[in-house]
Image (cartoon, rainbow, N blue to C red; front, side):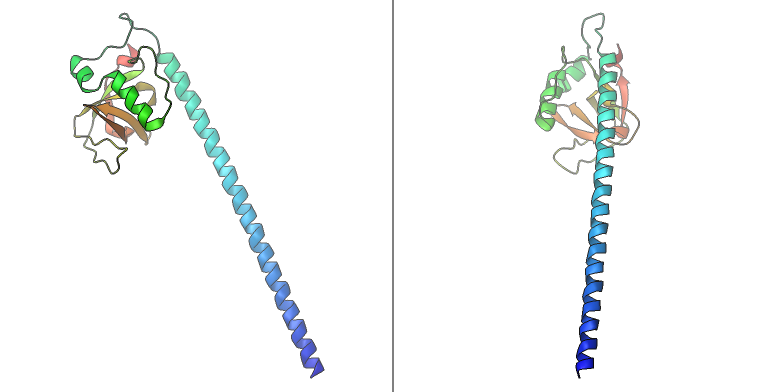
Length: 171
């Protein structure tokens, strides 16, 4: 009987040791996963910062006065989405966004290549051919979202749904 009890104690001690090893291994895996998540997040932040600096540099290069001293838009577009409305709406959506002087600098007109149905309040629905006001420096062919304004409405639309039709920002 004593031998049986001793063997049972040994088995229990071995089971506890295995359980402790398994817990330690799981904890080590969790630490490694946390470190990997931190590394990926750090890389993402660095890439975001690099994109932000690139956009700011591109915007600075586009901020030169025209012969009239400001970027001008057709009366139809000014009526539908004035630069002041664009910046006011963008501040509501994103917070403290710096407004260039004059407000039209850096903006351009884009046309919707196809319809876009908004799925949230932050998105702006588009019909095929709609003209919107966007920030020139933020428009590029890669997938993503861009802030746009038109006819008293503003929101985010997919960048690849838009094509620039008035390069006023380059004038």
